[in-house]
Image (cartoon, rainbow over all chains, first blue to last red):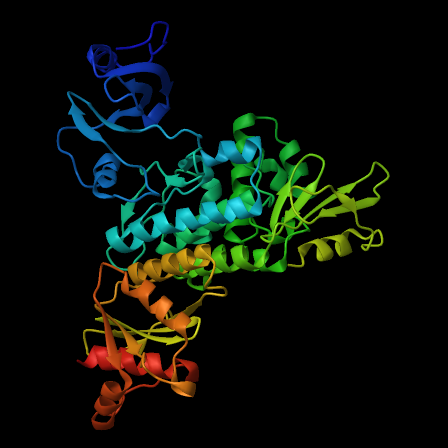
Length: 369
Length: 138
């Protein structure tokens, strides 16, 4: 069944017929994802829960590389569950999964951003899911990015989705080929040698953390990565396709030289230990990254225990300690530093001038546990 | 074949991972690590510890895992920290591989008769190493 007015003209006739004749699910939204297939959102009539139907090109010879088949073998709270999988003659298959209220992590980052504590908790969940991929199934995801991490709005649990690029690694030291799906997240070894290791997934999780912490990652406008000379070169090219080619070449070179992720662009208020973790996870040499998710997890937990929670809003930087003590720092139009503190949320904010006008000193004072 | 030897020292655990290849040669892997709990009264830290340990065991995929047993009845200077038993319980909850407890006496007796082919990379790993070595040889 489908709600009137849903425009799914672009979908194939057999898919359209199927969703209209299916009495179990009431479809209320349609999204065409190009090569990634057609996606319908609906509500199961009897059970009352919201679900996603993803249709994609397939044939009746399923193989174990198919996204839905892989998903079906995995049962983990941080990996998208699958309810049903069916071949749908002559060219389609579809799988049914729960709709995760909260959207994807890229949306969360773009809308409100996340506090450091939330960012670390999200990475913790992603690493738990990654452990399941790597150790239990010997799989690499190959396309980890905020757009492929769903966030449950109930408890901000991250759920790894979009397993279209997943591949099995037969031997821990033998790489598989890289996925071309998301260029900006490709690790250096993939760009240089078309190789992908378990540690390449670690690199992509490192980028996700880097983005959540506020490091410069120009997803919408990659030309921001260009230096003056490169920008000048780009400006001299008039044909859009040639311009894009040149930009791709510049970005490729930055990945090749390990300069795409620059931890010095992380906000100044963050402790050096955040930078250390980012640098280790996104190290140019895959052998120098965390060798497995658990070692990355250990450092994430260290940060959770040792660092206060930083939350940047339009007007203030809030720094909250587990004891309940809070600071907020802002700047006046004349760039004077204002620091206020309170013992807990019930108390009023009181000015603290011990920073003597220095923003660095204010960060230091507010950071102390 | 892979083994993990664990020594619990108060609020910290030291884990050594040994690998025996097809030729029978034994090496200590770079996965060897240590985890700790700063404040055992905080539930969140205990949960973090559980997640670290489970993720570590899953990642390593060892055939055998064991803990150096401590004397729960030890008194005075010989008494193990109560926190260590809390951590031991968390480790023992891992479900995918059986976690054994092996006494230091058993390990020492074995090593007295069988000389080690390699030694631990760090001194602080000695007890965990000896246990992992005992496991890989038996």
